[in-house]
Image (cartoon, rainbow, N blue to C red; front, side, top):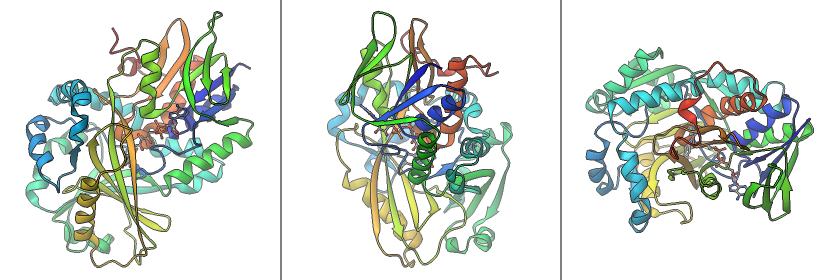
Length: 413
Ligand SMILES: Cc1cc2nc3c(=O)[nH]c(=O)nc-3n(C[C@H](O)[C@H](O)[C@H](O)COP(=O)(O)OP(=O)(O)OC[C@H]3O[C@@H](n4cnc5c(N)ncnc54)[C@H](O)[C@@H]3O)c2cc1C
């Protein structure tokens, strides 16, 4: 069988590698640090099957300046990065319309609605299965005004067939006593799930890939191209490697490779942070989106992880103080009385394209190079299925899915 190289071992690259391996290909998975060393390590772990509302909702462009001035709001910008960011930001904010929200919802829905099942199928019979849990994904509103402010997103979810239940904060606290007295209203989304340790989960999947005969190479890739025979190759710190086909799954770091092929990708990092409370005396039951700070609180193995924030500032700079302080303030208000051992902090990079949809498909008819990146806030949720879809594209197994919203060349036309 033909050999395929997959570049980038986050959830998307690992899932793609496993599905290609199951389809009979010889797969080499390459990563500069190793599996789950990028964004797939520290996310909130939510399988957000109903995540059909993008960040770019109507009115955001009006609210954004005020949010940037409010240190307790979840939107941040490294101002020195603004000149580089400006073209992206302009086109990203142009998507804040009802019509674009609907285009996004229709595009994202097929990738995420059955995410729990998709992860269970991916991990079936492997030790990674143990990390997948069914759960209600809850949204906690501290005031009625804040809840009413998000009515349009709940209406859209209902129209798309998602089941949810609206409860008073008091009633919800009977299920999840850690939140007693914290919320006015809680919306519980059914048929969701969580991964109890996203980094360990992706590593376990990668181990299964290796044990099933896959090759894992740790090397930094500097460039890629096609030789005279049309075969793709890449140059890496371990030398030149070529294959019959190449799949680019390097998350936010995929852009320079696409640009080298002359393909425009308006993608930026939506930097996000997590703070973990290790060995807490008590745990919440379900993952909870805390609406006031737009961060998710997820019970994980040995810790509670609080993850969120959208900060524009590129991939090169380290963490900033502002987002960490903002998260700490909100966490103090929620869990001020809770005892735990330590606090751990992390910065990650969500791969965000201006239309918030990933790039899944063949780069062009004359290149055996394929892409699967750009899943922004939902790469864990949609990663398992994206890998399956890409494997189906490569093996020419009909997907019964309109793939046009994900075309990798959609900005180059
Ligand atoms: C704070 C936060 C919370 C989140 N919460 C959730 C959530 O609850 N649910 C959800 O679905 N999603 C969530 N996400 C988003 C999700 O984590 C990402 O969309 C997803 O991890 C992207 O996966 P990926 O495989 O595309 O990229 P990555 O995981 O970033 O993997 C890319 C890989 O490429 C490798 N690489 C890069 N450059 C090179 C190179 N030159 N050579 C070799 N290798 C290279 C990197 O080392 C890395 O391992 C969250 C993100 C953040 C930041």
